[in-house]
Length: 312
Image (cartoon, rainbow, N blue to C red):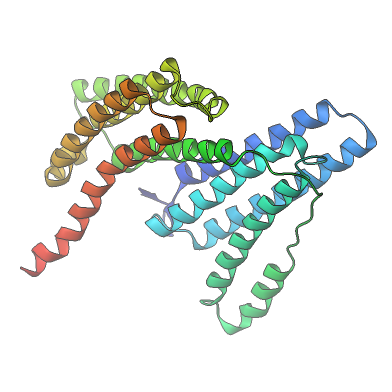
């Protein structure tokens, strides 16, 4: 975790980047749809979808800039927004036709979440600012067209895949990212080279997630998809600890990183086992989410134990 000079404001660039990437995907979906419908109605539909996405992005980013923290609450609310954005992205190709109502519902849910976040933030405002906060909240509206919903299972698999990606991303940034390597040649080389398998695994997992969604209704996940996702998650866990071992904090906070490394190793082995079993896509995604949660459980337990030790 880093801070802005002089102000003490927490710099949450990785979290905001993940959020921005989700928005970029939606804009790309909207632009791709326009490319295939270069007509006046198509342009109008593009404008409506783009405007809704832009307003949502502006609300979410501004709220996080003003009120966000590097804590579980901020991450959970950002992840919740990303999950709804994924649902919106799934409906954008048919937003002007058979998926219009589904897109409208997803957009309404997102704006409802943003409204609640702003209302909660307004509770802490000075009286002089509360009127402006309420006007800002009530000034947001949502509209859409009628349609039929897409497969609930397909959408569920896609959302679980997003959580897996989120977990891989934050396993790295919480335990290894934004930290200084030790001042030695070996540690520097280890730090640099450790990012190669990490980046490669995350990119491969992203590609495999497309196949996971495509086979959402299959009884078993295709072998290649299961192995890329399972082994990729294992590599992310292992590479994160490899990088962490090159950091200054590895020596300074041994009580955390030693059990954390063991938890990551156990989770990585279990990920390989999940890949070999090849359960249904939704189940595979859920199992990977659980396994990615293991290091977090260790870290939270360590954090909660610190006050008890001090009091003792």
